[in-house]
Amino acid sequence: MNQIINTNLVLNEIVIKGNKKSINSIISKFKINELASSNIKSLFPIPIEIQELETISEIDIATQINLYKKYSVYSYQEWIEHYWGTDEYNNIEKIEISENEVKFSFYSEYSDSKLILLSIQKDNPDLIIYSYFTFNSTNIMEQFNTFSINEEIYYSINNGEKIKFHNYIDLILKEIEDRENFEPISMAA
Image (cartoon, rainbow, N blue to C red; front, side):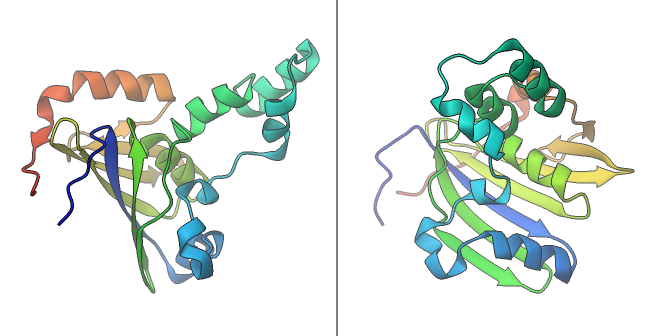
């Protein structure tokens, strides 16, 4: 078995459960025939008006206000930080599909996919999302679950308390607070 050289990598292992219609909707967003080019970002793509901001050097105040009202962000990079966490997600390496479940895994650099999973959950409240993140630099594995209760999005870290998701800053603060609960794993060579 090859050792992973880049210690900044995070293995993201995702399980999405739901009814057949919801799972088929998720599957249709992946390029199953072109698995090598599939990415988790296809499940929650950047809106066109935000994509267009990447090429604009200066954004007028009216546009900024409208973007903030609609997306709670002012810029392309802010949208990525708010809804994806990072855009450094590698393509999906492994995918398993059944009638009520999709399992897939991929690597990301430095960061896990919590924010994009919460964004996917918000758009698909009938789904249940389980994930495991293995941080190669620290040999730590973390479990993260998302779910919807009464149209509100919740998450739990390492099977802890159910926490209502408000925004990405609150999530980051909660992660920092819960660091002592992370369970080390052994990394096989």
